[in-house]
Amino acid sequence: MKKGQILEGIVEKVAFPNKGIVPTKEGKDVIVKNCIPGQKISFSIHKIRKGKCEGRLLEVLEKSPLETEFPCSHFGVCGGCTYLSMPYEEQLRVKGEQVKRLLDACLEGQEENWNWEGIKGSPKVYGYRNKMEFTFGDEVKDGPLTLGMHRRGSFYDVVTVEGCRIADADYRLILKTVLSYFTSENVGSGIRYYHRMRHEGYLRHLVVRKASHTGEILTALVTSSQNPWEGPAGMTEEALVEGFRDSLLELERSGRLQGREECEVAGHTSADQKESETEVETVSNPLAFLHLDPTS
Image (cartoon, rainbow, N blue to C red; front, side, top):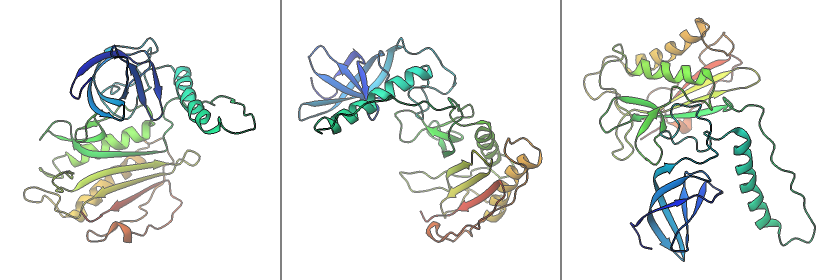
């Protein structure tokens, strides 16, 4: 077995954190991330150290018998979820086995006996997240602006996840509205996302939080302090951020959000203010906006 070698195998089990164990014909187990027990996969060896081998997933050749559900159109492309194709009971079983193995390793030397009581499921199978951090970027090099999650296995490509099922409808609507605003003719052409390698660009992240009991929503736009546009500016940066705010306030006014309807702006930093110096006014309104402007 050598680096770069391409092999095939069936995932025997998955250890924490998300490390698939794949036995090979050579008699060694290879660790491959982002796979599910029972899948037949192809992978390339990319690290051999101290008798341990790690591989990079290339392709799922055959689905696992555990995979019976595909509720999200982005599953397999988006890197946000691994187990969503399995029924929730199977997800709990796989995760419970991982937790128990960790506890076994920690507690096997103690004198007192301990009892494993299993893992408790959530009352929400979908739409359970109370925070999502979406990234601005493009899905292909020099492609149109996208806003969402990183493509599975990619450091750069970003997939717009309008149909994400781990976030509820308010998150999906906010994501769609923000992307539509920043790609609209009113904003002007050439607005730049922040390129992590070149350290150039403006739009970085969209962070959305929602309080499950009150329905309050906080939306934070994270940018750099650079010029938003590649070419001539269609408006001032202040007008750009105000337009972002107003596009989301309109969702409240029209009653399209499931959260409470009254809202005000909580705080807005100036363009030259550092993130560490940002102070946010505490308010009780359900939809608040904060524009963070960290140094690049």
